[in-house]
Image 1 (tube, rainbow, N blue to C red):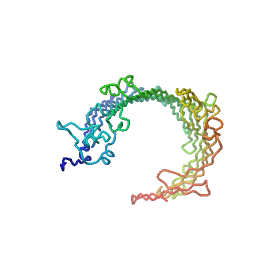
Image 2: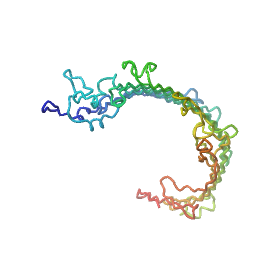
Image 3: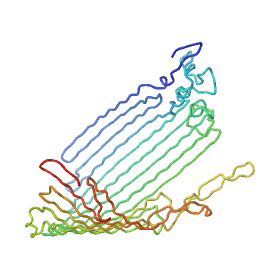
Image 4: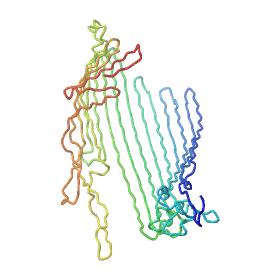
Length: 476
């Protein structure tokens, strides 16, 4: 920075940047015994950005425990608590680019001049937000708690009972204050403050009962599942302008004198599911699976919340038959077929309801009046589950000691009651509505790690060549 004719040349980019730093530390303790296994770790992360007043801190605690209570019972927990502190700021780079590189960024005492261009009060210094916490502050605090616990019982041979409970609690608070001479308020030149909080709770409780039984050549596995999901979100926000005391920042928002706004909201939904499955095998050659699901979703209207999704599958391992031994080059041959239904309730919360929202589009003389109207998306109490029925038949084979494997598949999916937003005439006073509309017929073509060729629209063929002796895999 040099001087000429009473003026100073200023490199604003150099002044607003600094060397960023990052540090991370972790300490862990682990203990294991025959009946008890425990793990504890503490973590700390700190990052200082390249812009002043832009930094991030994170503290983490993890604790895991597995305990064999009895020979037939065990329990455990996996938990983590994370606390973060983020200070953000308005990007000053655009101000540095547009500000004349002449002026006095600091006074004789080393303090930042808010109006660095010879006191011109129309142009703020790109450094103005760095004068202290009482000028510009954007601070976000977040606490996240995750805990997953389980209990597993083996009361009798072949019977397993397991209950899993997962929880996630998330609390966040963001406070923003910008003084009249901050970059954010350089057009309005008034103090502005706001604060918002959010509290999220999520619970997932799964219970699984499994029973295995072997009777000579017959093998049975019966599984029962019950699952419950609950989600709740509380939000609160407040803002205002002309805060009387800058030292109060984004606290005491009742002291703001202009443009006060207050808002709060709640969003909650839950799902309840039951499922039963029977797996049967005879000598490992003949396989049968029968499943029935019942799912309930709170997002749908009363009378349509529940839907049922059956499925069945059969398979025949021909390679295990006695007559198959005469073909040594053919190592695997399996016929299979299945049919089943699946459901989708992919709509937003409360979108089957007609919601009233406030508006201020009327007035009495010079006095603004409040009114209420329906939101543009109107509710539909007849909305049902979208269902997809899939039929599948296939042949799996392996030759030359399974160096070459492949399969032929035919499958088709019919989706009915498709959830679709249908536009409505403006004369109705609303703009759209969710409805169950039409059907689609589709055949997926993505199979992981293999290329698929579609034949005749619904017949698929894929080969996998595995040259084990060379260690290479080729996909055709």
